[in-house]
Length: 228
Image (cartoon, rainbow, N blue to C red; front, side, top):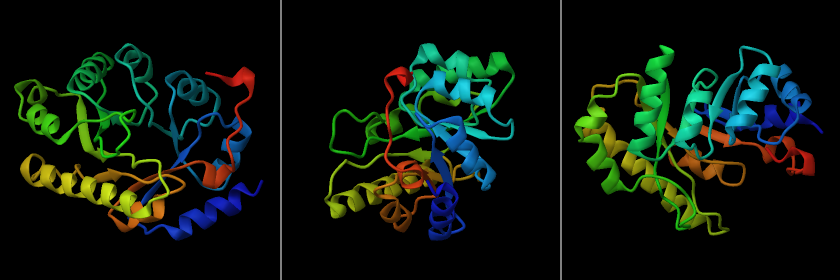
């Protein structure tokens, strides 16, 4: 499998402002090391247990991103290992992250996940929830998290115009929040949107971070023994 060639092709297609996070869920350490040896350092995992295991087994300079849904009871275990949490979808979760980060003596970079897709199964804040929670004293009291921007997932559809409109709406939310809540915060600058099937549209609509797996590694295989 030409992982290095695929990686080079993907990176050359991205503007310099866009960071590639390689989605490594269910991939073997050998596959990840091929990408690592080709220069890739940012990897994204969906499952807490899998991220922790790989972090312990692979080189220490890898930057691990949690991109899947995070349950509050898993926060404590992941704090020491994660560089950024993309999938913060409630104030409740943000408060738990802040609490555990404080105990660990660490500041944790977070992205607020916004619900932009038509599928109800996708997680994320609504615009009303975002405005309410960002105005709250509870949010303002958090000291061990750093909100770096937003994350969103488009509807799984072949309708490219729908996908574009959803990414466009997330970009609009980003600028609304930037001007209303994070005007003086230079760290609020990331817009994590775009995956293997739709990242070119996401980049056109302002993404600064894309999450790509199957485009790099090929179709995902789920061995029965690897259900983590």
